[in-house]
Length: 219
Length: 219
DNA sequence: TGTACATCAGTGAACGCGCGTTCACTGATGTAC
DNA sequence: TGTACATCAGTGAACGCGCGTTCACTGATGTAC
Image (cartoon, rainbow over all chains, first blue to last red; front, side, top):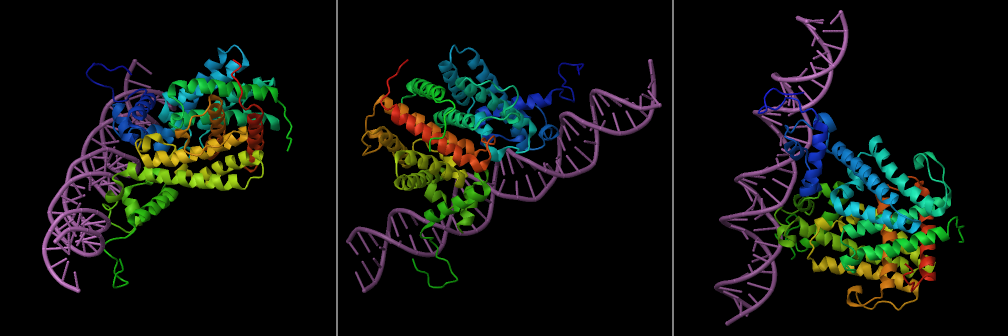
């Protein structure tokens, strides 16, 4: 792995996969999805343009891995903000904020993560990563309800219908807020007050879920 | 405008702008956004590839007009479903369903409408169209609250903070549900039951908004 | 009713560009014996 | 410890392709007088 002269690069990169992923991130950040090409990623990784083939196959495979890494990071950021909350109100608010912040700080990643048509539908890796984000969000809802948390993935455990309802209600809120804000659809409110509005909305919703936990369908 | 021989097309198209927009729709439908090019649209409209320049300038201008038409159609579909509702529960549910149905039936349009980075930020036409959709949604919320409806655009009238909160809560829910469903993120629930879940979630949310209208910030 | 002229919509050839893919190759690594 | 061989990662030239843009042009329309 070591090369004898500093001026001479080794024939094999050694960690090209990782280097390509970092190159991919940088391409997305300053050229966007439409500027994302295998050749540009290879160029930034300092490697010939045919090299990425060995690691990702095609653009779809590459993007799928990038989306999975995005979910990994979102999961970590959610967990961090959830961990420092002092009560259930704050936990729900922090979750919404962390989700929206992730979108705002990584707009192209966020967009790609939710572009089903661009990703590999059969990727086990992606399903796993997205599943973990979803499990974290589910546990936020379960704690609001006072229900026991999931130990495994939400896909391996059976949950009651009213839990599903609360998850959809919560995730729609969290995701919808982040997405609308990212795509500049909240221009009726000054940007400086977006967080205040979100805090009030999230607090009301979390309290409603707590007060209405185990609701019956009243038709 | 009439041409003397059936076998000979007139030099001027006569309604090329409209024809290009329809061609654009069809390109989006079967090639997606990444297959959307001025040349392909011109081809389908039966016109030389330089012709679209005269009508839309560049791709961004073209997409901006398509997005605006998408908002126009979404506004109409929302209005139709709102009009046939018998009560406030049903009105809110119909709104959520119409919004999600629009996304499901026009996935590429929906995606483009919420891709701020691809559209012309200065387009008066687009701002107008999106503003009308937003006004319709705002009036749904105002009716839930028992408040008088807006007569003009929401941008021209002053609304109370608690109204803003209810709008963000409602639109986030409506938009988040539609977007997550479109991008296949609701796989924890069988697709056949998505509507049932949405109905329960929307009904609960609309009742909550009605019961909590004019809420104070309880800190 | 006719003529002249400006304006506009659309043509079609040419341009340079960057893309993904293919292919024969080469350098490095690991393993069998 | 040494040798042979298979495998794999990366090279670099070549391919065909479709794109947006430019440009000199032409056909049609509308308006002034």
